[in-house]
Image (tube, rainbow, N blue to C red; front, side, top):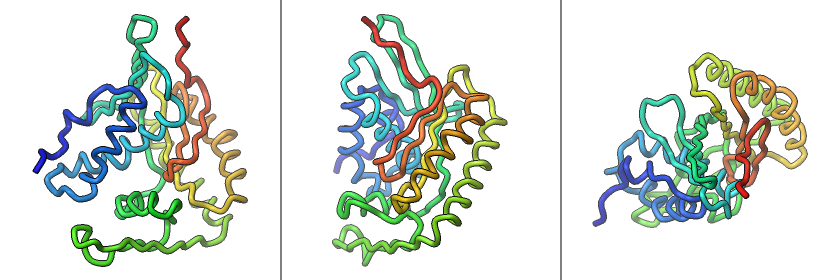
Length: 230
């Protein structure tokens, strides 16, 4: 049996392509290997996997640019490292999720099998993964307005907490939200992030990334780009 994933394996600086490939290569272990530390499992699903989604959306094909998860007591969760000019420029990234779900690992496993996963309904497995138990998930939508108001309240609370903490200069905050909503709800959600939450975030942070938990949604606000060398 191979050794379990350890902190040192996670905290390697990788290109976007390398990070995506590594996440795919170890994800099954995070679902099934009970030898992996609990804090690494939490970091994988709440920070490292979203960092991989960020790499997919924004950083493919960028030689000299690396992404590195950071697990520990520092004031942020990842680094974007730009070495394309010959010097090294590091941008810290702080991740926060505006939902909390102890069944997130099951939902993440369900997603590639079905193409979509409800993030706020019941989810369960028949038996164990080792025995081939199947995952089931049921949507529980509620009405669009009540879901939006819940998202808004959760974002306001989380942002208020982040604005009170110290961060290195130039930190970007990345918010991961439940984007498994009806299509007609997305314009209102995007306007909220653009016109309201980004203004709060940019009082303290260099930029704001907004990522959907499904991996499909990505928006950015503020100063989020590195200058290209050349």
